[in-house]
Length: 219
Image (cartoon, rainbow, N blue to C red; front, side, top):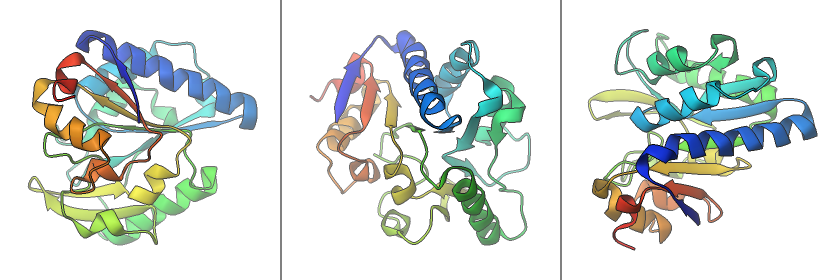
């Protein structure tokens, strides 16, 4: 994996620049760009920085990597921050309020396939201190799912989740992990070693990791 190190307060801006660069490349090659993003404090700052860049939002589609099953507008929902940070016309939100979650996950996967053949230009991920990424709980069978691009998992941390699968994430043209904090150091070490005892160890060998020095303390 490629690792770039920045001060924690510089990470959101650097992540935004990486995404914007890949967006422009996709637009030049295919006329449209597809990016999947995760939730969290640092990612929200990154998305606000991205929104401040001169991008053609009518040709940039933002998908969700994962989402908690909770009502619209709930603080547990990643979508609540995404709607506040990015132009709503570009967002494709996971349908986690549907009565039939499995059917809704299949519908989201079909929408993604129709839009970009299931191949995203960028997938942005975070990393938990337990080594989870997306909504792949440690030891959960979802990590081995290969027959679909979107799955329902959990409860994980008390919530059912909808998530892109490992195969969907690893098919992306760029997999980018944004991580900060000394509490993530052990998980980062396992991820970089591609230790498959943790979910993040299943990410592709060419993933890009943007980290602050504290999260690399175990290296």
